[in-house]
Length: 270
Image 1: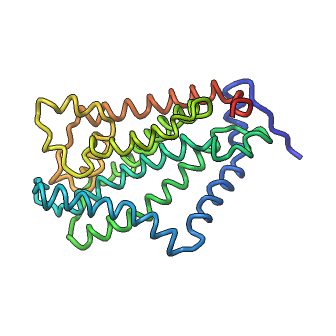
Image 2: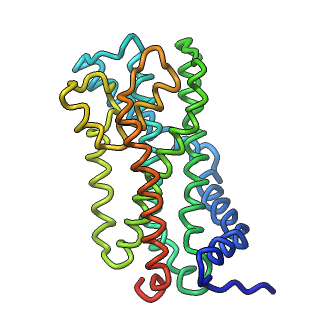
Image 3: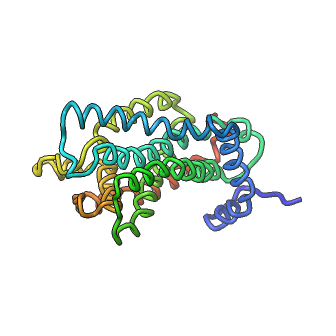
């Protein structure tokens, strides 16, 4: 019987995390089975949320406000913004609550607590791929053919995910002690979807405000995501994309450091 104890060094910690990879896959598989056990309900829930968001934004921004979409179908423009946003928001919301929702395991046995957000990452990517089938279908329907820039597509997916994880790890650490964050994050996400170019293109932002707008990392991620699919119709604000990349990796590093610094006290505080 193998006993895994808390590692005293960073090397020991990551070694312990690797040794517990079976637990990681068990947690991911558990969440996926729960979500997709009744296949229609599971798949429908993953698809319906972004689809309904697309419909609402298309009606508001495309039909009522009549915003420009650079010749692209407005529904496609919106859905290509909704998918990375939902990947980020799901990662942030689920990671921020991962310690609270797994209190039983947290207080009974030691294992690297980063296993929780790692399992959430796997589940979120699976959900994203299921939803992406709708976007792929729209591209076929509208005869949108991607160019060589499609090779950057996984990069922007990864950015959205690690941005959510980085913020989520910080929020999860604070959430153990200050439960107010459970109410704060859903509110921030509701506000953030309108402050990000989910329902419109970044080209609609006045040039004098581009730098300020780029301070929102999701702006660069969503713009880059769309550009990787339809480069001829989308022109990202490249300084914003670069800023988003730096911020995402920095927040992931900070999030892991903060999470690990408080990890030994989670079981006692929660």
